[in-house]
Image 1: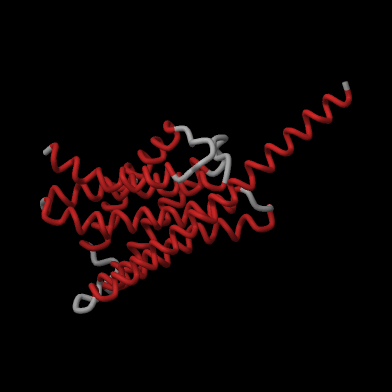
Image 2: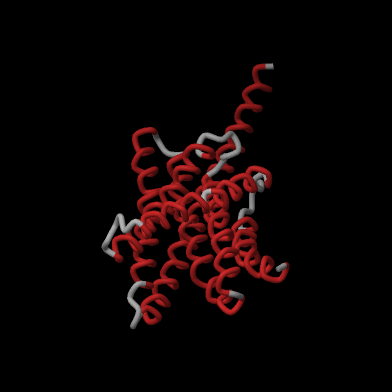
Length: 236
C-alpha cells in the first residue's frame, strides 16, 4: 500500500518541484499552493462521477465526442473555474509566474488522485507509462492554463477577458488532441510521442515567458520603490 501510494504521488511531486524551483524571485507561500493542490484533488471525485453517469446512461452516444471532447472540456473547465474563483483575485497572486505554479498545482492535485485510483485498480505495472503520459500531460495543461491566467491578472482590463478565455481554451484544445490521439488504437503510439514532445516544448516556453515577465515586474516594482524613497527623502 505504501509503495503504491509513493509511486502514484512521486511523479506529480517531482514535476511540481521542478516548476517551483524554476522561480528565481520570491517563492510562493507553500500553504496557498497546498490549498490549490487540495482543490484539484477534491474535484477529481465529482468529475469522475459525472463522467461515469454520462457513460452509464449513454447521454453522449458518440464515443469520440464523449471521451475526447466532453472529458477534456469538463476536466479543464473545473480546473479553470477553481483558479478563477479561489486564486485569481488572491492577494498572494503577485506576479505572472505565480499563475504557472497555481495552474500546475491544481492540475497535479487532480492528476495525483486520478493516478492513485488508477494504480489501485491496474497495479504498478502501468506506473511508468502513467508518469510519462497522464500525469505529465495534466501538469503541462495546468502550466499553459496558469500562463494565460498570469497574463490575464497583469494585463489591461480591455485584454483581461481574452486572456481568461485562452486560459481555458488553450489547455482544452491540447487536452482534446491528447485524448483524440489515445483514441486512435492502431497508431496512437506513433502520434503521442511527437505530440508529447511538442507539449513539453510549448509548456516550457510558457514557463520561460512567464518567468521573464515576472522578472520585469520585479525590476519595475523595485525601481518604483526606489523612486518613491528618493522623492520622499528629497521632500524632507
